[in-house]
Image: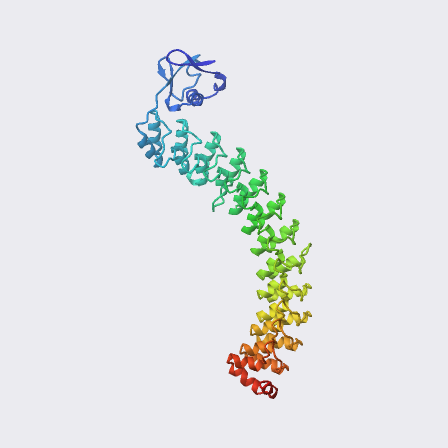
Length: 516
């Protein structure tokens, strides 16, 4: 055994020479080992044999295989702290080494609390990082933001600036790969985050060092979820290959799959699905399939459906995926959902009673309406206020949709909760062409609404001469009184609508009605 003795002749450490006999730099190697054993800066350890301080490059064989070596530890100084901090910041390797050899304490920090090792790692200066490590700088010390040297080296990663070498060195030196910052982010979170997406080599290095791939931050976001959110496919692939949990959700129930869908990244979605990501798991208001619909990615929706995503799944407001697609007017998505292997129910109503057909009509998506009608959507199904698709189309004044619904045998005389037919809503909305279309289809123009008024009363009350004319041409009864005992003529006179009055006075039956 090779004994290391202090000045008093006491044995401090014993090492077996076989563990380093093949080394060409015995002294340098032994100094590093003693530094770790004694928890002391290697710059402050001097080895003496036969009264001579040994050089780092000398080997055990060159020394004649001694049995004892004197070990001297020099006291650390702190009087050059300002110079040392400045040298590290400006990356002056020679100056840093010269000061540390005094030997100088490597535990000093900048005014904001940042340790020198963290600063050097952020800059990617491999040589200074090694020097500080030799001086026994705490490898896991943190600044005020809780970030370690490893975290900073990963977060500031730039291959050209030497950050990979720094990361590799710190990992090999035993840096804690899972130590979180003040937000709970680990070095692995840092590796997968950011706009570059070029850190996969670092991700694999951290995973090889047994970094916890499923450790969440303070928001419950795992590295896999973060990688998916940033759209870094290669990082996602590396994490999945290492068996990261594809279904671990964050605090808002967002999963890696949902993040991948929201990014619109089909390749990433396929990777996650292949690793058994749950296709219906997601945030309260948005499962992955809904996210694909909102971003109008049919290829992703198809991938999810092929993986057995529930095309009938409803959101908190009762909307199905087909509702969502129809509300966006995205015909390719509507066609896919309606024709999917597990096809969506075209007549399923949401919380307000709207079917996909009603939703698309209210929003004026005529191509979607025509397709849904072709898919046998019920043209008479009503919402919770008993408004039918024809009520909606008449309100919108979309003659193409009105025509398509009438052709699909929609009932023009179906009443809503206010007792109004589609003809009433067309009159209220002042859509002449829709009124004419409904009249030609045989809509009942004499029926009274819940307030006892006919469409003629309403048209006259609103002063809408073209509508009154259309009703007259269709044979509307202008003698009929409403619940207040008023005729259309009296409604027009009360409202000061002279054009309507003149129009009605031009008809004998209207003139007679005014004297009743």
